[in-house]
Image (tube, rainbow, N blue to C red):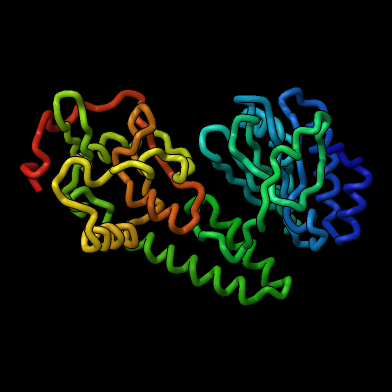
Length: 333
């Protein structure tokens, strides 16, 4: 797929009454894409790519970089996007090999740039417009099926950092006549904020967590890690967003390997209660190899609800177990 000329791309946006600032940003970003050796390809997605954009539509872009280059490329693009008329910006990660930045400007235009390196499993839904693709990289990233819709978005995915972006989206939807979409989203957002307030009120204190252990099979038996201690010693680790569906434990006997219990319907119902009640905002805990030490019910909830990114912390070196070669049935609960 060849790159579309900047004049042609700007013409498409003009036909959809895009903000003049979007035309300028698109030209500036195209220059960045062309000049930066780390950039392999870039596309325009979303409303403007579909031909259904308007004055309030986001400028949505995805860029692909050489291996390991996503974060540094996003920082270089930020020099173009973080202009003097910026109202708000926040950023996050797509797993370990991608990132994003979202910008809201004083003229009520907004832009989001997602960056993934060539090793990331990042796929493109059609339609999209080729902004920069000198080597024909993009067709290999196509995926069949409908693109995600606003109606399916999970509210409050990035906590308070993304709240301005979410509220601006709702204002835009109302202005565009999509009042019911805005109302439904605000209802879901309100429920999340109430849950957040309740969680803060509880303090997510250690004594509010049911006694539980992470069990690990070793050559000498079963070791047990007190989950409350894991939460305490991991609380200052950096949080990153990961893809829950990629975790190996989803395809393993995670809950029953250490016991004579069987996955009976009653047992499955109990796990489902825990899955339904858990909060995806609390980071799961991974060991140094990326194995789940705490948060498997959150992982299951995310997969069940189609959430493709959840927060996680990871130990650089695993802590010592609390019990070595133990009988799980005899652990203190």
